[in-house]
Image (tube, rainbow, N blue to C red; front, side):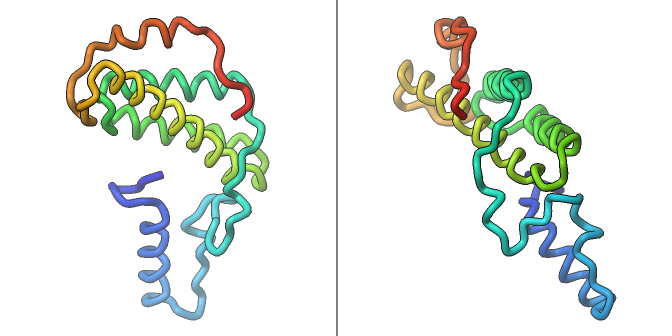
Length: 150
């Protein structure tokens, strides 16, 4: 997740440093981080958790739209995608939020890599941002199922 173009972890670090300087005795990192999203010093949140087929399908469809519209590059719709994931996580119990966001990001990354592989099957020298013919995904997109194991 990015805030103002910076990775979330960098933004949190910057905010923590600013708060320590201005108020060192009463520093409270929780005022910068939503409940369940403080992953500082933890690694237990990096695990695949079960998510509904509905949200999985939404993640895959949004990833496909973003990939095609941005020719494989991050664009404004990608930022909307991050908000979509965040809003979904906010509907969950606090202890499941970070892991769910990580799981959905893994689904997004996996789908994006499949799309990259398909483009490179048709053009081995393709680089992100270069145009491609979206019709190359016709067979892949016509498959209505998705991998429920993720």
